[in-house]
Image 1 (tube, one colour):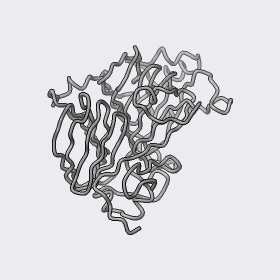
Image 2: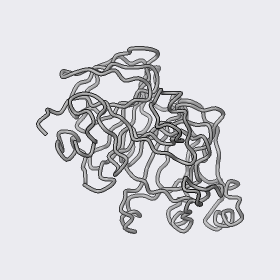
Image 3: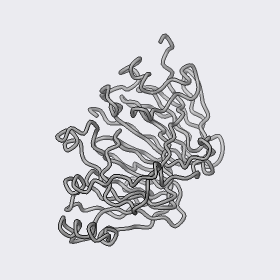
Length: 331
């Protein structure tokens, strides 16, 4: 491929139908969803096998992100590492539309995934709520619930009685390390940043059939292996209550795998660090420009930004809100 790598790559997502999905990504963000399917996940930035995002505009339009990595390597990624397996790309950004409750579930960490040869990463993730119609999330276990109490509740069909549920509203943040029992519930749309992984151990799924009409598999033994029964988790926090919050935004999450920042109406020049970054507009629309071109992103759309470049971000319409996420070096 002889094309010079652009500074900015607007991305087209991969859409995934889910039994709990709906059509709100179409109504909220004017996404061109496949007809008649209940879309639960929009893979905005993804190198995950068979769910890759592609370049939407410019000289590389139509090329999958994984193909660009093979061609451009560290010029595209910067200091983060990459391995050529199904979860080799270090970061995954999705929009999720929960029109039904998701399964009550838990994710393992990298060590458990590697030790048990699960052919995937562990999964650390964070959610930023974009829309909620009186929705809630399941997040962690009630005080005093240990393995025995939890297993008894699952056996009795009363697992929801030992889990903490919290109402959520737009702007709330939920950080979910591996080992956290959790579920996104009906009526909530989120921005999700996570390790590039699909390792999910379902605990309870409401006895509903999957898209194929068959019950979805549960993984209680694995879940009991990885649940952190001693976790001390906070309640979901509104972004405005976070330590460095100002009227222009804040740092949402900075953990061992990724960093995510939220900005409001911030017309600015942004300098991308030593690793790639992804910008997702969540309200209004923005013009992104650099020395080699410019693109307009409307709400619900994402652009990849090359390491080490300067990008000018300007409001085009509405009150601009956007999120910038980066994988951290070594991942």
